[in-house]
Amino acid sequence: MRIETGLRQANDNDDDDNRVAKAGQRSRGACTPLRDGCAERWSWNALDRSPEVRVRGENRETVLFHPTWSNGASGVRGTRSMRHGVHYWEIRISSRLFGTSMMFGVASPAARLHVDAFVNLLGEDEHSWALSHKGFLWHGGKARPYTKPFPENECTTVGLLLDRDCGTLTYFKDGHCLGVAFTGLDQDRVPALYPAVCSTAAKTQMTLTSAARSFSSLQDRCRAVIAALLRSQKELAGLPLPHTLKRYIGQSLPRYTMTPRSVTVETKTFSRTKGVVMTTDVAALRHR
Image (cartoon, rainbow, N blue to C red; front, side, top):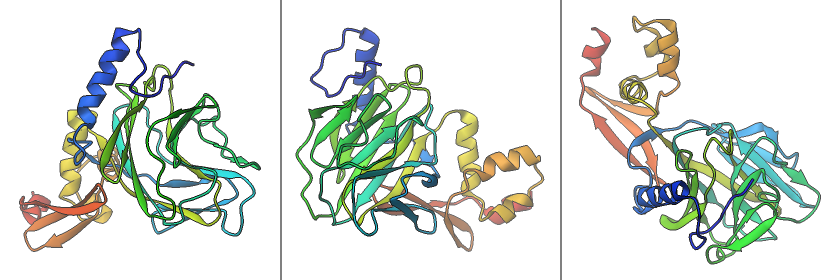
C-alpha cells in the first residue's frame, strides 16, 4: 500500500490532488475544523489495548500508560470504526510529555499495540499512521519531518481531522492547523480505521476531550435534531415510535441540561464547552 505523507510531495494522480485540495479547504479554519456535524460518542477500548494500558474515567475517556515503570511501547485503539465521512477528535496530553515516543493517529485492526522495546509503535508498518511528539510522521516504518517537537513536560492538546471521503488525515496542535499529514486513507484503500494512541513513557496520560463527525445523510441530520430535544433514554422510550427508530435515535442522545422551556445541548469543540439553546417547546413536543 502506497501512502504519501506531507504537503510537499507531488501526486501523479489528479483525483488524489483534488482530494488534498478539498481537505485543505476543510481544515483551514483553526477554530472550526468540522463546520457542520454533530457529537460522536466513542471511547478508548478496554478490550483492545496493551496490558500496560489502563482505561479510566466514567466514559472511558482517559488512558494511563505504564502505571509503574516502562519496558517498551504500549497502545490502545478507540471503540469507533471510522469507515466513511469526516471525523474530528481532540486528545489532551498531560504534563508528563517525554520519552522515546508518544504518538497519536489511526490504526487498522491489524496494527499491534504492544512491544517490549522503545520504538515508534504506531506507523511501524502499513497498518497504522501517526504523529510522534517529536514532530515526525510515521507510516510503513519510515519517518518524515512534519512539525516542531512538542515542548516536554507541558500539557498539549492534539486534534485529528480524518476525512475518509478525501482520504486525508490533518493534525491540529493547541487549536492551530498543522496541515495535511497523510493521504490515501479513503475507504477503498483502507476499509477500517480506528483512533489510536501509544506511549513509551511511564505514567503518561492522554484524555479524549471531544469528538465530532459530519452528517452522513438527511436522516442522520434529522436524528441529531430530535435527539437534542430529548432528556434521556427513558423519555425516548415513551415516544410513539417503532423500536428500530427509537434505537437509531438513541445512539445520538447528547448530554444536556434543562431549563423550564428549552434544552441546552452540551457540545464540545476545541476543548471548549458551549451551550446551544434549542427554543423548541419540548413539553409540547412530548405531548404531540
